[in-house]
View 1: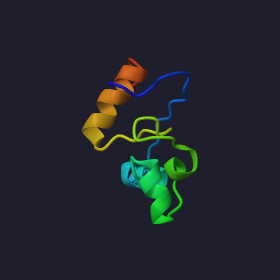
View 2: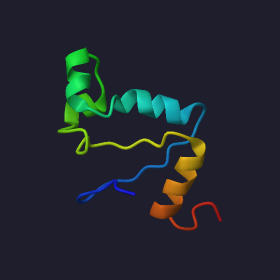
View 3: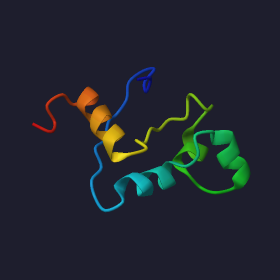
Length: 77
């Protein structure tokens, strides 16, 4: 799992359609493409490249659970 290259803040966001809402807010993986589209997203504002795009969002409930357990062991205990 590659998510960090320095200090970071990890959030666990809960709610109806949390994954899709968060992914819509952070935007496309490639910040340059997001900037060209002209749509606001966190990645278009703060991302540098496709691998240094400033934000991560799980793509499914299953992957979210795996990633949360890696960052916060015992979270679901």
